[in-house]
Length: 81
Image (tube, rainbow, N blue to C red; front, top):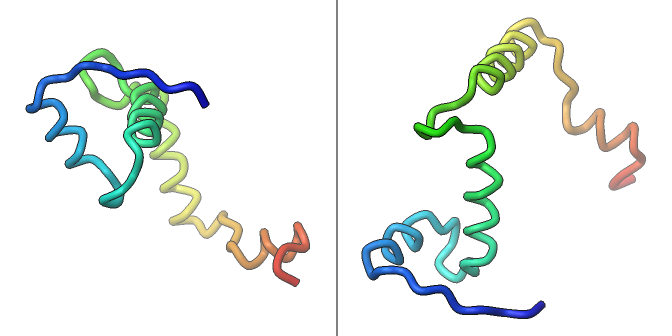
């Protein structure tokens, strides 16, 4: 992978570092994750209406027991057997 340098203030670097999942997580991974998550938010950083609706529907499915266990998914896809 080709690499490049970007310039950020020390304050932004500290904020980015505080978002790392683990100490040695590459900034490339961190920025990709943040950008991926950003598409679920509106311009003010709040979840979009569609995202909130999807979350509510997911929670209802969990409450109603309409979920599939990880074990069932693994068995269906013949993983780990």
